[in-house]
Length: 227
Image (cartoon, rainbow, N blue to C red):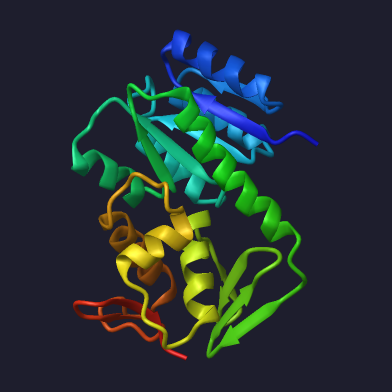
């Protein structure tokens, strides 16, 4: 069954080009041209990944991303014409997994999508493994996390980071290590991406993010999960 992608951008020529190229690779592609339409399409759903422009009519890409994250961890790649670091970090803060700056090469877009799809297919082959650490329960095969029995919503990358850390308790991973292992060696982003995801992860799973119980910092080195 073909993976299903939602492409959201108000520039119709860009959407047309992306759609044509992705369909040539066998993906099923839906499109939306403003923020409200994007949310309508998402709710009708079942998408494997969303390409989401930041500058949209009616609702911005940030607002769309934030609303999607209230109910879903579907991978989101933000498309932005702005190159400033703050815009990229804002996208991650709202729950995006990745970003691509315009103008982009369609081959780069497809490479990012394929990397996410490969990882997703690999995850689906996992057995029904459950990892429990204190009040934290990680359901690997269904990619769900519970704290004291309550389900917590994580993005795809937040889950990937936590899974890596929890599988190797007390092992310290540098930002570069995490960037290579979770995002891939070809990922063009910088190490601040890791810091943003760690901060968001702590805000979701820690009772006191400033004094974490699970995900710790070894200053000047990196991050680790306390087993």
